[in-house]
Length: 161
Length: 239
Image 1 (spheres, each protein chain N blue to C red):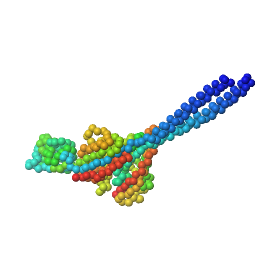
Image 2: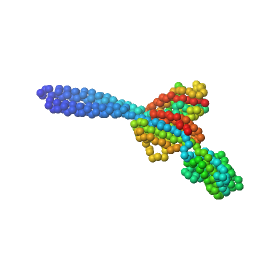
Image 3: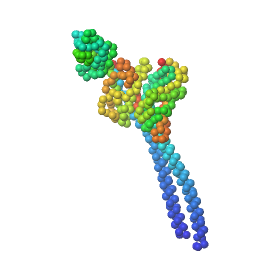
Image 4: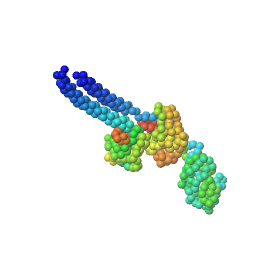
């Protein structure tokens, strides 16, 4: 009994140390997984809450001054949208997007903002009268520190005078 | 031996508790992620019942007539070129016109007619300016058409009336107006929300370039309603 005492204590101590090390590694891994899930969850939540909708009548969108069209977009989501990070592609052509009034900075849920989509390069590919095109508009939100994204795809009829 | 076994049991129990708590936290995070992914945005559905463009019993003045002395009084004390308020004997307000005067008496009116609203055809409106105001008058010969919009909530969600947008357009000229909120701009009732199944009509309203993108005398023939992802369109009934 007395002879086996020290070796048992050594074995027990060694076992505890190994268990502590393994446990530490496992707990750290679980903690990392927890953080990733938390981040993904918040990012996903912001994505789900980000949405934009077209308010303008898609059948009669005027092509103005041979280089631009104006559209009204509604923040139909549940979070603030960034008016300065709106992107648009019209008939495969990337447009420069600006807030038409030049002063709107806040885009709250439910609010409608008019944007001007400009690119003189599109003019040559449009014919006089009706032009049916696919319009893609992307918006992003930054209200909660996480960036939510949404893309609107809508067929529109561009009317060139 | 007994002491080391007890120690091992205590340490083992502590490990189990720590692992249990970590597992609980992980499960909660997974649960929260699932809840976030199941979040549904509002999907309101509002349908256009009718959009009319017609002459109501009262409206903005479209035309005046002056027939003195058979119907109208020339009055006295007026100055030619003055823009004078037209005072209604009924519910009208806001109208004015520039007057043509000879020797203080009204002999006609100019082209700068501000239409106002609430006037009826045949109504006598007195001319409120000059040194003897309201001594002269005109007759309202015609009034402008006005629009009404009727919608019904066909969805299962209650709708904030301020989120309903309408855009008028003229399919002939391809002109598209400006989106406006019919139940904010042209609704005098107390309702703030449109409940499922509820139907609501705006007040009669004249077109205004600043609000609708069309002049008062225009006749846009298409109405496009947008609320979030839901759209609806209807032909305007022009009579």
